[in-house]
Image (cartoon, rainbow, N blue to C red):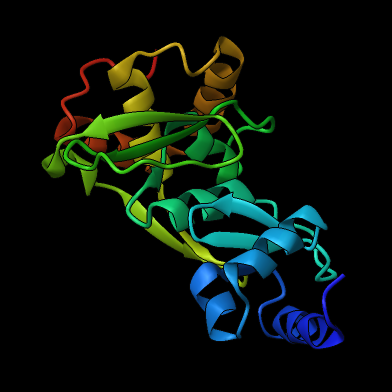
Length: 197
C-alpha cells in the first residue's frame, strides 16, 4: 500500500483526465517511477504504449475506437488504413484483425501496443492523400477516408481483407453514386486500374 496522499493524487487525475494519462503528466503530479510500477501491479494503471497509460479505475470504459487512439499515442503520424478504416467508419460490421495502419516509408519508429498491428509503408507523396483527423473526448487519431481505404485494399491486393469484408464494402459503395465517383478520382491519383468488380 502507498500513502493516502498518493491515492488522492490519483483520484485528482481521474477527475482531470478520466482515461489516458502520460508518464510526463504523472511525473508532473509527483509520481515516481517506482510508484507508477506499483500502480500498474495493483491494476490502477494499464500501460498502453511507451509513455502512456489507461487509468483502470477511473470509472470509464475504454472507448469503441481505443485501438485507433492508442496507436496514435504510440506514433502520432500513424494512419488507420484499409479494412480497419472501413470498420471504424461504419462500412463493415465485424472488426478485422489485426489493426491495419500506414506510416511513411521513412518512419521506422517502433510502435509497441497491446494488440496485433499490420503496418504498411507508403511513399511521402501517397501517404498524405485522404487523411482525416478524428477528435474525440478520449484522444485523437488519423484515419484514411473510405475512398482512400478502398483504393489501398484493391491496389495492394493483400490477404488482409477477407472476401466477406470485400462483399460488404462493395455493396455499400455501389449504393452511393457520389461516393463511387470520389473513389474513381482517388483511383486515378493512386494509379488503381480495376477498382470495383
